[in-house]
Amino acid sequence: MHITKKTLLLIWTISPILFVSAQSDQSIYFVAGMPDKNFYQDDYRQTYTANILEYERDTLREITTLSDSSQFLDFLRYYPHLNAVLALNTKGFDEKYGVELIEFSTRNLTTKYLKIPKTREFQGREYSAYLQSIGIIIENDSTKYCLRYVNLSSEINDSEYLPEYFRIIQNSDFSLVDESVPGDVYRNGGIAGPLFRSNGGILTLQGDPSEKLLVIPSFLEKDSVFQTKIPEKALPIPRRNAATLLINSNQIRLLFFRRTKSREAFYDFYNKEQDRYYQYPFDDNNLCVKQYGDWICGPTRLQYVEKGTYQGKHPGQDQWITKHNKYSLSIPEYMDRNIKKMILSGYLAIRSIYDPSIFIEWNTQQGDSEILNVIDDTVYYRKHDEIWYVPIVNGQALGEHQLLLKNEVVPAIHFMFTREE
Image 1 (cartoon, one colour):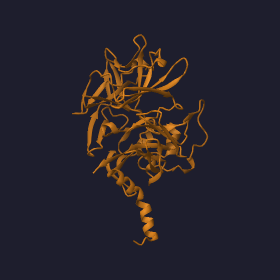
Image 2 (cartoon, one colour):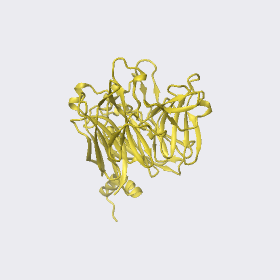
Image 3 (cartoon, helix red, strand yellow):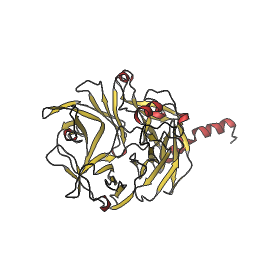
Image 4 (cartoon, rainbow, N blue to C red):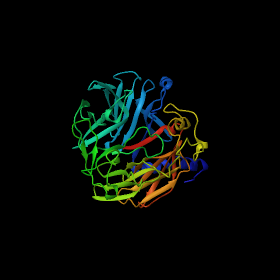
């Protein structure tokens, strides 16, 4: 075959698509949207949208709207173990019954909707739904979602907070019930990047020092005991803020402990399939970890300024797009509102859940970067307005990094998934 310059250009242009298709025979989808807990009243008049996007030969096609411009996007997360994207919308700041839970199935691309009361009364006081988090319980292959309601009175104190699991949403029929919580809850960390931190996926556990137990705080008569072996180096456990549950899946559990007196901090890792415990040092104040496949993913080498705000430049900041798109504020705008004390590094890393000593780190040279997923031993990550992929070689190292997509809406993409057609 005679290969012309035009043919070579075509082969080079579509080679990332051929690589992904040959590797998995799966379609690629992205989740675009960025909840911002610091939106102001004026912003509500020009809110952004959230959509599921299908990737087709260097283009992105909207297939499902999770939040339109008439709504306010409070929460957006992808849960790979549930094969679901969850979103919370409100129609307005003052509506009493204006919360909508959306569950998008990444298996069959279908959507469920449920209206939820934004406020409710309890013991003569009014409580409002806390829309920056969704609790998840998986029990006997049944999934339940949970919302936390908080007292917004001017005399608020810790004892007036209702527990995170006060109202349970049963996924099977999307009904609302109040019931006790089992001693095990699903969690999948924060986002695998330093931005987008307001939608938390972690859970603070309290302690029972006399019994050497961790508990899930409850407004019911008895707290739920969180079933785990507490490492000796974490004893004695405090009563408040005893540990942070970062990841809890059917494969692993990852806890974070910080000893009050010594200020020592460490991760406590447990592989449920191997029945194996492992501890490793806390990395640079980093709680932005997430499980994708057989890997714990996240940024590394993050730093914080103790006083004031960071006034310097982040890696790759000169390449940041300053204009917002239909899905979110621009990264400079978002940073100015939400992340003023963090110094971004541009470093990302993955750690094996089967051998936590296997730690693979690389420098993207872009502070606005995050891991989007790990699928079939391939890492997909975002570098501001670009999405890259790189194979994991023999479970020990990374191969060649290749560009998959460059688009002005990519800074608003924080999740991706694939689906067999």
